Length: 115
Image 1 (cartoon, helix red, strand yellow):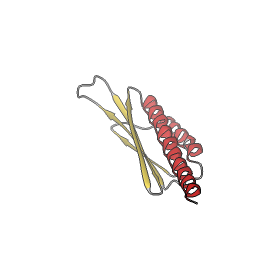
Image 2 (image 1 turned 30 degrees about the horizontal axis):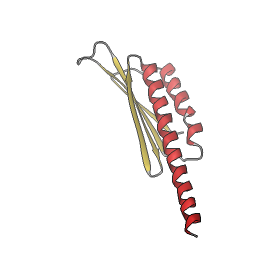
Image 3 (image 1 turned 90 degrees about the vertical axis):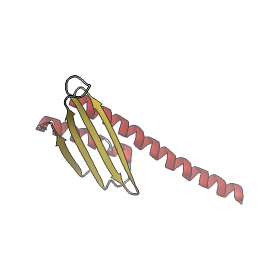
Image 4 (image 1 turned 180 degrees about the vertical axis):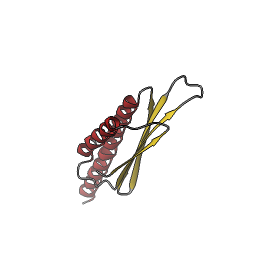
């Protein structure tokens, strides 16, 4: 899968890069034969504001044909943020896949009933 990694206000070392690549590669089993056009991953850190300490943000934009799946999560640790965003994206992918499957089943049921 073609992945672009962008970092905002945070330094990304090889350990984090490999961790992100591992999590993104796990998404392929949920996508099945769906062709992924592009996968953009952005990691960032927010300092200040009302939250004390560092708040890490992970965002994934997954471009598939006719749709863009976007998920963003925050956590106190960069690895926790990556895990959260991956888990939520899996839920979104499974939900979309089930929705398409149900629409195909309804279409077949209507065509059988109409005959």
